[in-house]
Image 1 (tube, helix red, strand yellow):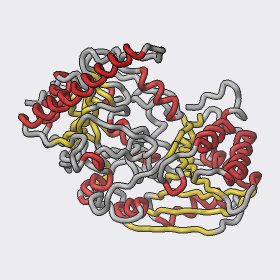
Image 2 (cartoon, one colour):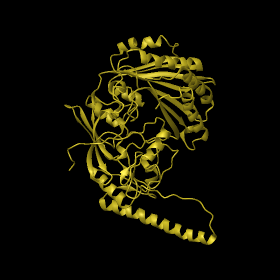
Image 3 (cartoon, helix red, strand yellow):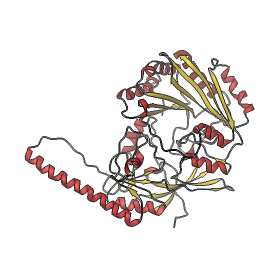
Image 4 (spheres, helix red, strand yellow):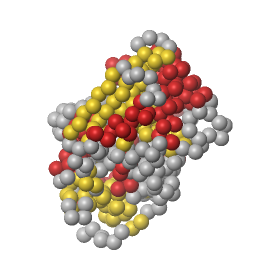
Length: 490
């Protein structure tokens, strides 16, 4: 029976902004014996210390000996896989193994830059199943990792490296709502669209975007998704079922469900977009600087959320920009809020507005149905980074101009496809920044923008070109190198 008392975990987050730095930090953040790494891997007892190898010159006779050893190792791997299969079969837990007809599809990562071969992918139906799988992992001395939506940018849902035992949570999709208290219990196998529909049908909502990263156009009004979590039901590395409260949960346990505080869904919402095409670098920089200054100075209401989007121009030396967002109040008041900004900007190339119910605005942002079972999962081959800009030291004019100049030139000739999103975290009345920096595992509570840099291989399929790494790294560096030396970015 699940304990009813709450255990509070104080967790240390990765405080770097760019994802490549975050990877390095998280992989070094592994705890010892029977704890899950912050990257999502669960290392069983005695797996904390990994073997190291070096290449040496050896005589042929020794090589023949090595060949015998390799044959033995190959046999031991087969025995190892058979042991896991026997254990899972005895528990009645469905699993997919290398060689099974389902394995190739089941082990395919969202980001095809990575190729990871798990030892097995399990499909538990209950919390007790998860507990038993963790015990099997410990008994067989194999890393265990949980997979929910399977959209890790670096394939951590498959273990991040070969040989992990994957706990696929796709069978655990219950959503129950206490309408009187506004509390929802959400199992972690749910996809975001299904959660949005379940809550929306009950007249409730959570802060989120079109993906489950925690930020969306409602975030200045409601905060980040993690801010709504009251408790998490988890299975610890030794199979113990417990109840714990927020933080970097994957550092310590597999989360089976979360309890969240929901919000009354607004009766109406509007998704808007103002677009400018074919901008030279100076005009593009002026638009970004003007929007940045506007959100710092003006008393913008919390029900206005937004982001600046940047795209490749039609000719070298130009880029296209849009300011898009959500307005969760009556549309008549939108113009009064946005017009003072628009008067400072060039005439738009085009505008678009969609007004509907809260759920209809979510469908609009998703590009269609919120039913996640209506189409197969997609894939991409990509490289991404992020950067958070501080309110106390916003992007300088020099940094913004270097940024737009880089995009208009190197971005035009880049071998990869790309887009940039400058998500509005700050501005007056932001619920995101109303939270103390030391209150949650997300420390960047004094930011203006969270900038997402995303680049994809041609046609979204492998291989990802080496020039793509150079392009995106150089783009981020164009901002940092033109900012103060002590710039406190994230």
